[in-house]
Length: 146
Image (tube, rainbow, N blue to C red; front, side):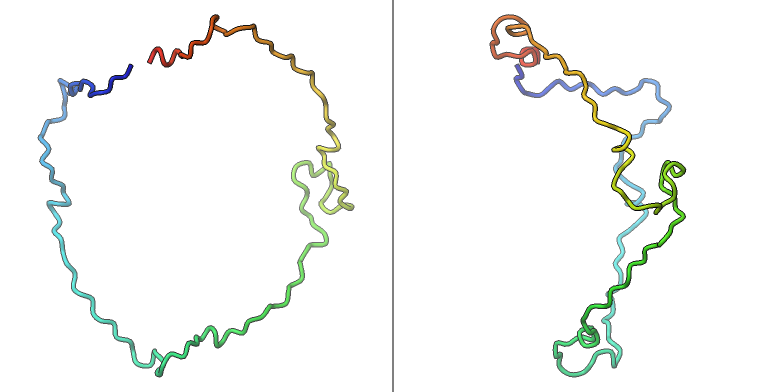
């Protein structure tokens, strides 16, 4: 059973013959050594040019609302090609060019394949009683071993 608690800590594995020289970590970075914090100047106040804002009180209208007239446009006619030189994908030679004859709704799958029944599978009958023999006591190998 698992009792909890701290596990033993393994010793650190350092290579005995290393070509990398050992230096203690001093905690400095090139960013911290080379750069110092700087403050920018305060931004100047933005003053609008004269004539950009309409004078007078705000009456609640906008140029969009004033200029735009709502409504629906005329629907454009659909542009379907009468004839097409684009062949079907796949067996273009066997089926002929696109648009030849009316569409009858059949597919090559429906025309060439018919449903077939397979053999019935045999029923698997287990031997009577538990596989390990004896009564089930409620324990598992996982619970016993781990």
